[in-house]
Amino acid sequence: MNNNSSALLSVEHVSKRFAGLQAVGGDDGLTFAVDKGAFIGLIGPNGAGKSTTFNLLSGVLATDTGRVCFDGRDITAAQSHKCAACGIGRTFQTPRVFESLSVIDNVLVGADSAGERLLGALGRSWRVRESETIEQARLALERVGLGSYSDDPVTDLSGGELRMLEVARQLVREPKLLLLDEPTAGVHPGLQERLAELLLNLHRSGMTLLVVEHNLRFLLALADRVLVMSQGQLLAEGAPSEIRSNPAVISAYLGDDHAV
Ligand SMILES: Nc1ncnc2c1ncn2[C@@H]1O[C@H](COP(=O)(O)OP(=O)(O)O)[C@@H](O)[C@H]1O
Ligand SMILES: [Mg+2]
Image 1: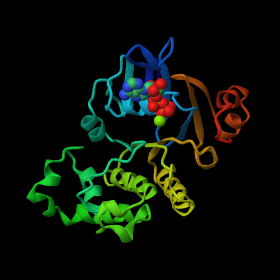
Image 2: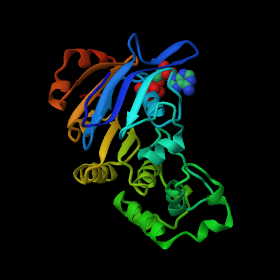
Image 3: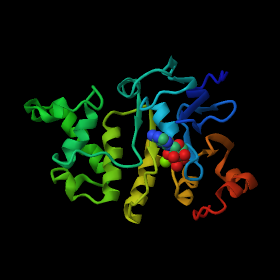
Image 4: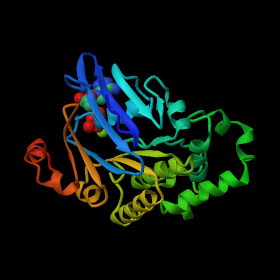
């Protein structure tokens, strides 16, 4: 039981199996807490269970055991639209785009308070959006460095730019907790710098961040605390400097080609 009163998110003994394979949990389930306003890095080798953890926290998957509390509510059984409405924003490891829509319309899909519902996007009423929402979407695109592409077809964007679009889509909702799954993958260095600046600004503005990242150099320079997962369990937790020199962490990464 985690009684940390300053926690925005608390994950208690959570587990998930896929066809008998334990993806998240281990013997006692996964337990950790994220304080309000924290910038937490979540790292671990491929297959450690990081993306599955995000899926459990954002209601994309149901937990097998344990409890998830967010902002004073038990959201263990909440589905994704409910988690989004509660203030949890997340991006996916593989960006999700609607190919027939423009860049800004793809952001507006995420701005829909009904969550991932597409009916509004495909219906005629789509264009009659409140100008305030459209303005917010433009602002979000500017913040991630895609301002000049707003009206272009989304298919014109590169893979890295699509990742930034995913971030913009979440920003419009002004989530209390933002979960980013490998935001730098395929993103060119210029945009990565912009992303780092953006994450620091969001952190300074009080947003709580939980970021999965393979680029440890990028993440350890930004996060104030790091959780390390291995085989579905928490292997270590600490400040970036502690994590860099933790022998268990180094050993979990051996054979992995990502330098700390
Ligand atoms: N939908 C799924 N069905 C079956 N197995 C899955 C599914 N999603 C993830 N897994 C398995 O769960 C484990 C953890 O995966 P994942 O959470 O994607 O790891 P990470 O994001 O840390 O690389 C892996 O063994 C993966 O193959
Ligand atoms: Mg993953």
